Image (cartoon, rainbow, N blue to C red; front, side, top):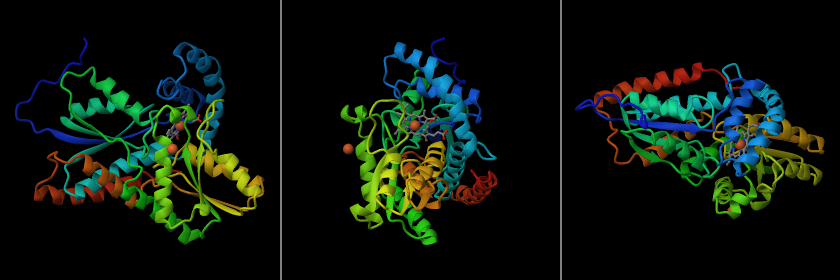
Length: 368
Ligand SMILES: C=CC1=C(C)c2cc3[nH]c(cc4nc(cc5[nH]c(cc1n2)c(C)c5CCC(=O)O)C(CCC(=O)O)=C4C)c(C)c3C=C
Ligand SMILES: [Fe+2]
Ligand SMILES: [Fe+2]
């Protein structure tokens, strides 16, 4: 059958609204087979690797997966928490807290999370929302800066899913929020709170995930959006251009990616006599392999080995209250016109729910 079977239409049923927080995804376990499954799905996405399909199939299956899965699994093992992958733990907590926060503001909405690769998958989550009677869906990618490699890939998966559905819900998609005041403010608060506790660095390094340089030449706005986030944050922190630098991390393969690269920049700073650097990753709303391993462990080692004296990693926004408030603001702006407001009685219940949400998020334990 071309289209999935529909539940029989219930006359007079009230349509529900859902917000789906979508993050990249992560392996189910820090083992070579689980990492291989995850990498295969991730790196087979033509949005992520733009190499002709047949040639890439041989490189991926013959070289990358056999070589990278075990190495990557070791890295995941170094950052894995009692409750699982940090990326998943933080994303789940963010969704729980966002639901409580929106409820306190009077919105009757479901908030769930999904992963673009791995579990819980977008198709699974969208099917469940349909079964629950959600007929208005807001897709909120956990990528503040738009990139064809990430945000557009989430859109692809959503469209692919609904291409098999007869009764498609009303759909809205968030594109980006790299310059949203509340997001910049959440970053600013997290940096200032860190500096209040640990003092200030000689240089603040703002490290974003890299993408191939070619995507910039071909019109992807990602590079410009990262620089805009950095410029707005620097202004909010009253930093002069000499006090911070924007870098790009996680280069993959041999082609040129966006420059300057994070690790070589840190080595250069150490050699120039910069004693203390603080590294912040503003493009990652949740701590993950790329921040906890690549930056907080590997980049730290590189900086100290090159003669640097003090390296500080400033954690991602994770569950910080101002970040949850920013997410709620972004969701509210995109739900305008949808009838989500509760009755006064519903509001009282929502306040109790928000308390339960906070207790639930706390009970999920430390992410790392
Ligand atoms: C191969 C090309 C890749 C592109 C392009 C890319 C873009 C990109 N990625 C993120 C966010 C994350 N990436 C993460 C891990 C990760 N990324 C790549 C490759 C590309 N990313 C790989 C192969 C991996 C897996 C780890 C490894 O083997 O090195 C993660 C962390 C996931 C986790 O489980 O913790 C995030 C988050 C962005 C934002 C982005 C483009 C803007
Ligand atoms: Fe990545
Ligand atoms: Fe640019």
